[in-house]
Image (cartoon, rainbow, N blue to C red):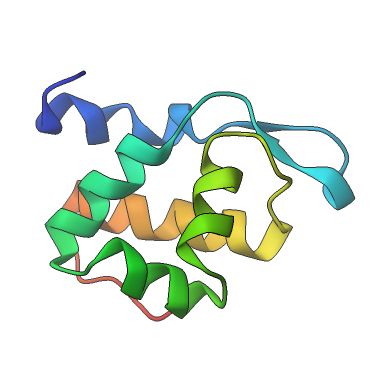
Length: 93
């Protein structure tokens, strides 16, 4: 596993998706990136899933690229991770 400082440094590249807008899938497991962002924002993974309007289980399946992720949620995740990387406060999902 990458060190937390390098994990978020390349995070936006790690949040790449593939597929049409109606069926976006992460191309790799991005759960470690989101977990590190949660740590930096001092929020639990469960609480972040609830802010996104989903369950922890559903979010894990999306982050691992097993289930499709809605376009809006993907963009919210990117903003959340980018804010963590830059040391900014996260906005609501």
